[in-house]
Image 1 (cartoon, helix red, strand yellow):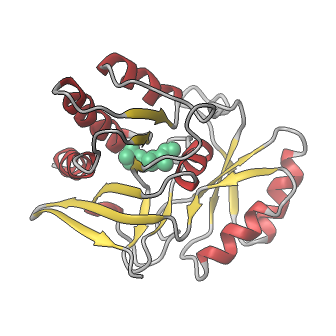
Image 2: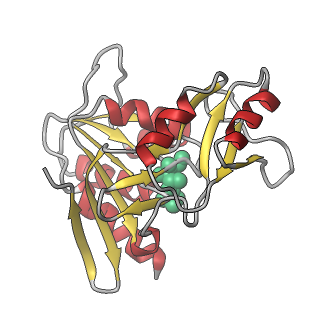
Length: 228
Ligand SMILES: O=C[C@H](O)[C@H](O)[C@H](O)COP(=O)(O)O
């Protein structure tokens, strides 16, 4: 059921790609449905270039025959399609990065004319942080000191580990501290405060970036759009 909702939302988002666009390819199980839908459209003749946000998404896109490009050839994107871990419906602010791709995702989102998010309705929350931790990518050096700064902002930082117990590494080779804040009052202020901590590379709060969110649910797909 949830997988059907993700897929429907992802396909609605993928339908926004048009001939000639440079498209950011997100990461995660929902973004994978969007990449699959784009692959099918490319097979039928759609002409786009993709910029993937992870090695996983790059591999999937290559398998499907989606031509890829990079920032050296295209510094601006027309559209980025991605998933999210939490969406605040009023603001379209997001938590992202439980899949570990938050840094590349934020770089791609920041370079895109439009960021379109696809989720199932279980991702909607009244306040960001209600359910998901905020992932924070950090450098190895001084990780404990960085974690202490994060704790001082009210988080409970936990080093992300794989199922094998080994510390998770992002595609950039960095560890991630998952920071439980509980419901966040001012996500914009927190996003800025997190990135001011020495040792923090990027955090998973995406504030004021999403233009629209496709939400899959029992009644089909509905669109949330940012006002203004
Ligand atoms: O790093 C991962 C990304 O931010 C994903 O878009 C996010 O975790 C949502 O993933 P999923 O669609 O698998 O729930």
